[in-house]
Length: 231
Image (cartoon, rainbow, N blue to C red; front, side):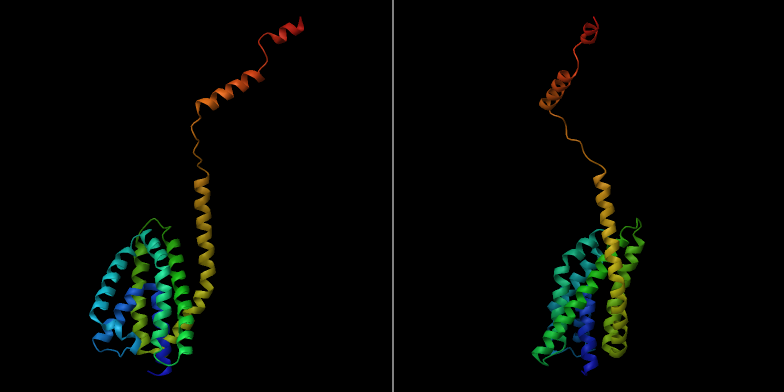
């Protein structure tokens, strides 16, 4: 691999990991096993049959979990601790045995890219799930799957074009992330206000009710007191 192909593969797997890690692992494993690409030495483990079967099984699980509103949010939250470190490891491994400094740099950049991509995906899903109909959720989820497979295919076959498209994507993501964050914060504020406007009154105990009646009787004037004073 030349430098452009190495950069495209390293950043491609990190970007794809932030969206759908198991789709990325499955595609790389299948392409390596079928001889359509030569995986770097560190990624050759992905083309082993047990790894391919595990990645395929988890991709099927995510495929259905990602189509259910609410379930996809929980899945994304859980995979915050999976996608980001996996993206860093895959990016570092994709550069091959160049040097330790290059691998550390690739891990830092790859982990950051995977984290930003994951945050964009998870935050946008929270806002999309406010829609009562599930069609938009299914459409976005399918588009994400297609983007992962298509993006990795472009990174392997047209690395220069993929790197250029990735730069555009990063610029758009930098512009979009603050807006998504503000939208998510506003959504949670509305939810908090909705629940805070429905207080549940605690049942009054017999002792507190008796105390209230005693305070009322002590504060009320005695019957006939005003008439006696006029006399």
